[in-house]
Length: 261
Image 1 (cartoon, rainbow, N blue to C red):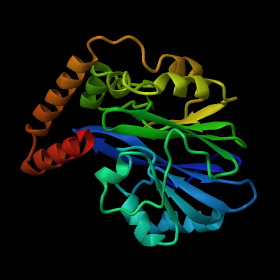
Image 2: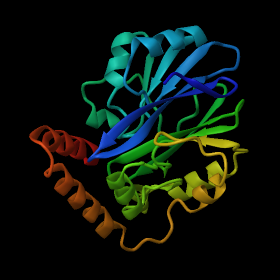
Image 3: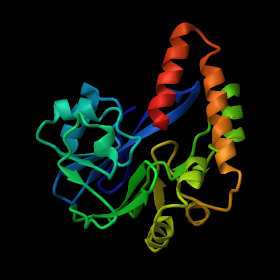
Image 4: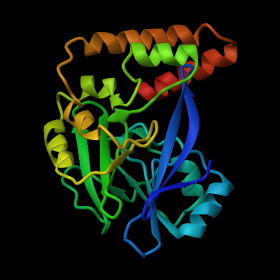
């Protein structure tokens, strides 16, 4: 699928991915950082292809590559190789996780946005998590990462897994309910809710244009059993990974380990 326009100076590209047998959409967002400048930022890069490179060239010059949290970095190296002159941007803790990448800029909770048409808001947790949300003023789009999910698999296993463990969307992420108590989530939510948001572009699922305010307000509701459910989720994932072929076992476990660490 090619880049789809969702407003002035902003496009989404969707690829299908899978983890422990659950198929879901993985989205990269291409943004013009200053209206009319042709200067582009690629947020949460998906797998590189020459077709995507050609499309980007038709829209402007890719000058920024952004790995927006400590999970969304799998394909960054591919893009760095193709765009060695682009500025590589990350978030706190990602440098420790990806020592093979040389980040030019780290955006943290005290950072001022280097982009004219984008505001930055960073969630930082004492555990190994941080992620950055972008608000694109011309399109009034909030570009989020894993704070919210809109995963709706069509197969039986994917439906069961998603509905059982709280990723069937649109909804707030169950992962963040367990990770965010020791974080600046309260300040993040207050700031995001004050933006004149028309739509939310998330990294996993379709564009959210309705009900986004309720999702933001209920991002971290009381959830006393979150740790138990996360352990159960992990156990189920391991069991699933071990029931297929040898290739499925290896792939499932590798993806699980890379995702959790």
